[in-house]
Image (tube, rainbow, N blue to C red; front, side, top):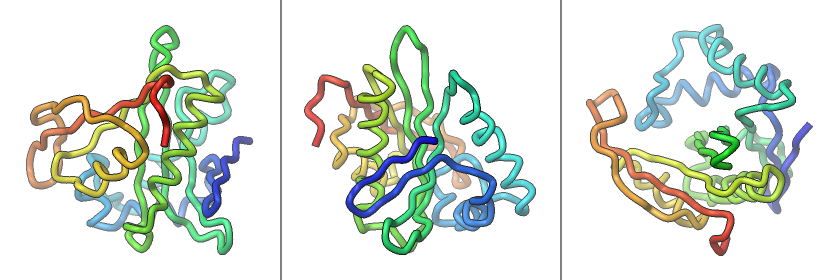
Amino acid sequence: MINLWSLRLHLSLLSLTDLEEVHVLHSFPEVDEFNTLGIPQNVAHTQSIIKPWILEHQKLDAKQYTFTIRTNQAEDFVGLIALKLGSIKLQNGEVWFKLHPDFWGKGYCTEALKLVLAFGFDELKLHRIEAGCAVDNVGSARVLEKAGMTKEGRKRKVLPLKNGWSDNFEYAILDSDLRV
């Protein structure tokens, strides 16, 4: 079992016991605004989404690690963060995250992202970790930059969001970059 700890947070691999909290997280329109997943129809729909993520953790050669983010003190559910591995030869991965709106703007996402980046570089020996966010998603862009990621470019009209196709900023960090 993989557990990552910081001063305020505890990250652990997602399990079915987290289903209700993940369903609530996915049901917030403001969380869904810049995501392509959409709001689930019901808890069973959420379960069908997260079950493959959970099964992936059981593989010896897991290609994605999806973590719950909880506060250390109260064990409050803050959100989800994941690291999806790419090519073994390229030693790369991609991160994504979703936070409960009650925890926005408090530094939790940056703290969780730094933990996942350290896990990717130190434990998984990755060379490069990437992330993307819709160009209007100012909060996520700020998180990526605070965690030390560099904006490398912009993809045009690649995200099918509710209000139409959105451009996406591309970010990355290398194992050789000075991590903050």
